[in-house]
Length: 78
Image (cartoon, rainbow, N blue to C red):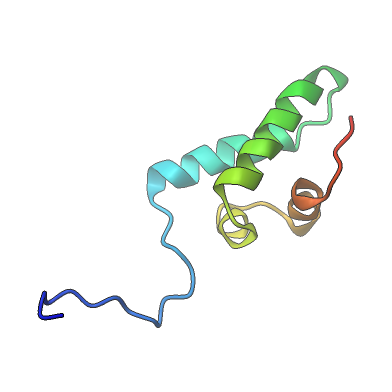
């Protein structure tokens, strides 16, 4: 092991850098739109959030619990 690099077990959440945070916040904004014409964008944003972020990351980025529950619920219908 002598590389001098230690991975700290004390960190339970991945650190979200500023660009990733901005991306997650933009997707959260799209996913939370309620306009009927936004359905396709909502679904795409939710699919990206499900595949690219954990619920904890979404909380850190400002998503509320209702939206997080909706994003991870299946199936989705507009």
